[in-house]
Length: 117
Image (cartoon, rainbow, N blue to C red; front, side, top):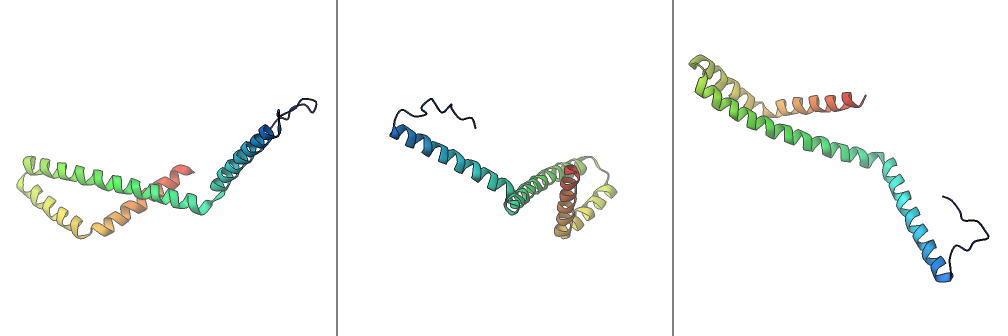
């Protein structure tokens, strides 16, 4: 912050000086808040966790859409033995959804952490 020379007045009157002081206090308060937010590791970790949860939900939704499309294509084009195998695989996937989602979330977290290195 630069200071004006001491021989020049900084304000034309006491009211203007009070306004300048109030403005400076407000700017200083905002700067302190911004610095405090950057150093709040717990809050930043919570924000990052929320981002990862959102990304996982998006991946889950996209996977469901792609699986449905693949299933339709499979039913239209695949021979009967392949259809039967796909039906068994789909049933097993539905039965173990939680385990598969946990594995996918773990993989996503690993990729996010790996990218930051």
